Amino acid sequence: MAKEIQVTYDCADPRAQATFWAEALGYNPPQLPQGDHPNTWAAITDPDGKGPRLYFQTVPEGRTAAKNRLHLDVRSAPGLTGDARMAVLEVECAKLEKLGAKREYLLDSDDVNEGIIVMTDPEGNIFCLD
Image (cartoon, rainbow, N blue to C red; front, side, top):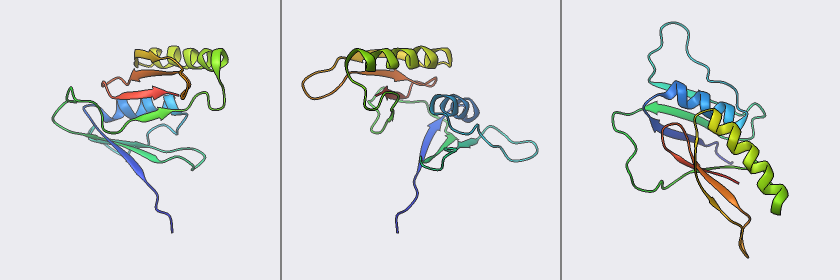
């Protein structure tokens, strides 16, 4: 039997991170417990039930300068190639920048891979627009 997975992010502001990623991925907005809830965690889910649950938890330390060992690829242009692909990625990049993401750099297509845009979320975690 296959197991479900949850991707957990350490962060400073779980609600803000969950809200950003819900918008970026088209996930359900964070659901919080009733009553006064300290901002120690938040979680979002795929409305279609296909993607993993994303869980954001408060930790005291910030992100280190080292490269992420794990990152998300936001697949905004699957199946597209060339200029059509990059046009879709540029539109998505602009949308995510308005939500607080930062464009880091573009990896142009080569003989093996199509182009991608490398970005960071509002707390500096790397992800790719693919």
